[in-house]
Length: 284
Ligand SMILES: NC(=O)c1ccc[n+]([C@@H]2O[C@H](COP(=O)([O-])OP(=O)(O)OC[C@H]3O[C@@H](n4cnc5c(N)ncnc54)[C@H](OP(=O)(O)O)[C@@H]3O)[C@@H](O)[C@H]2O)c1
Image (cartoon, rainbow, N blue to C red; front, side):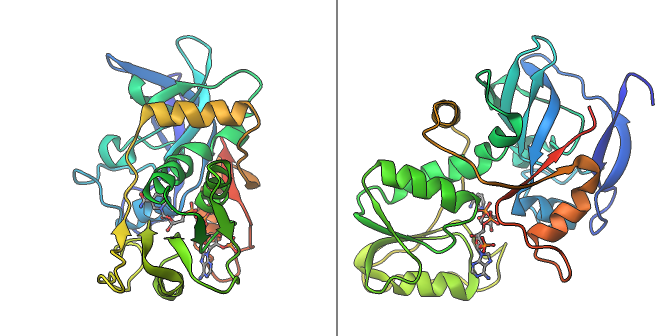
């Protein structure tokens, strides 16, 4: 491998498992930051990137290297950073030794914050933050996957706003429900919402077949698609650094085990169960 090459875990056609590919180290263009990756979180959407079901803004360019959430070092300054790859637009994946991203997507990581703890924050944290805004007039909130990445962060943010997060098994109607699972589990969350309450899902039907609900009992279902908001990511990082927000990391694996990580996230037969985010660490 030359100085200008790196290992990225990616696919050369849809349906393959991510495997080590020798690819050029990306070149940071004007207004971009080259990051040496220290930790990359594995998200359910990464599986769609290798399967070809992910909705990129433009046709996918191969090799496809997945990955939304990157913690590492700004190569130019030596400073720790956290980044959201905005894969839909950039197609720049974090499952690699280096990634180059527009500077707007990269925020400083305060010293002392472990990159493994920070890596799960961008996608799940931004989603949780935007879900909170969608239900912030609720006094009671049901999250149907409270132990997942979005669920744990949303639970903490909601509690700070004075919203009571009710346990999944709790009887009785709630002001708002957030679906992070989809399918039949989504329906049962919807059924718990009081008349005229709020229901928001982040699992639209392209991820989980099932069909959207219509308006019922004065509840208008809403699909939330996360949008990048730099100031929200900065705020989330500040909370993490101050100990007011914690991520839940279930396993740390070498980057080379990306395929196994995706099997675990997809709950593939025979794959071990991991509660919490899987974070991949490149050999850097
Ligand atoms: N719309 C958007 O912009 C957007 C953004 C980010 C993510 N998402 C989507 O949001 C979903 C959640 O993401 P995440 O990162 O929070 O995932 P995650 O960390 O894997 O959490 C998923 C949660 O759902 C629970 N769960 C999964 N399957 C279940 C089932 N069949 N029955 C009951 N509970 C089940 C899990 O329970 P256990 O803890 O017991 O495993 C976990 O609590 C994914 O589908 C992801 O693609 C959407």
